[in-house]
Length: 341
Image 1 (cartoon, rainbow, N blue to C red):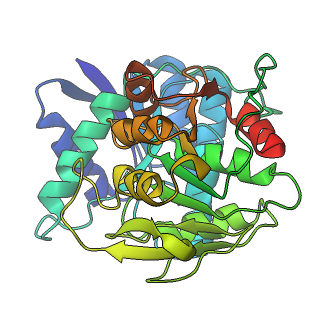
Image 2: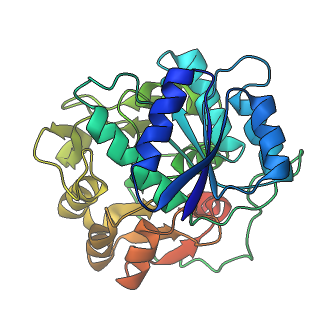
């Protein structure tokens, strides 16, 4: 039985989340809190397996509460957010940087068309995230430490494109990589990040504060430029075509997802082959794993995030099972790879 603490200052939303979670036989809500203070107090006396957390609350808000919980009584924390403007959305991603493992959409109205879908996603995410092992984060926590130095192969000398696929736990990892990119990146970087619809603009705004490289949402038939970072938009697959042009597709979901990492990686393999660096980061499921192997078979440089630094070792783990990787690296070591190629 998965024991959950639900934190939200709206009693209506709080009860909705409680009802959603208690509808599953494997989940039991053992407590509720309507502020950061009461959540922290509850954590001192009880041991839930996972916490769902609102961000904007009176007094100590969700952001501060997450930091305090992760410094004292760490458990997986899911941000359930209804935030829409970029300023407040930044707080959601700051919460992930402080230790929250995932962000999902808040149910706002039982009668809405998306209520059942949102409810299923909450249950699914709580079940998966409850299995994650988290550690205490000191107040001066300094992100992930680099692992032991790796020997890199110098045979990859003609990289013209970088493609990145990432899902659960991705935003802080992308921030780590983008904030430390070396000077004068000479290739475009294309990213598929699985994220709640409506959050991609907020993510880009947040990441842009950490890097000097321009970050965009990709546009149809846009020519991608060296030293620019492009994210797939909500609800569209992103492909890269000859002459560095983006093609956005409204085809069916792939691996249950749109945008799909597989879609991007496959197009990169088809049109650019060995001139690609493909990177598969933390995330649930297997999106992009087979296509990373396809890239490797075409002679591309392929990288998966290591298990130790991944929030969820689903996508990277599936790629490793297939032998799709040239290297298995921490985010900091991935930055070193950029410096070499």
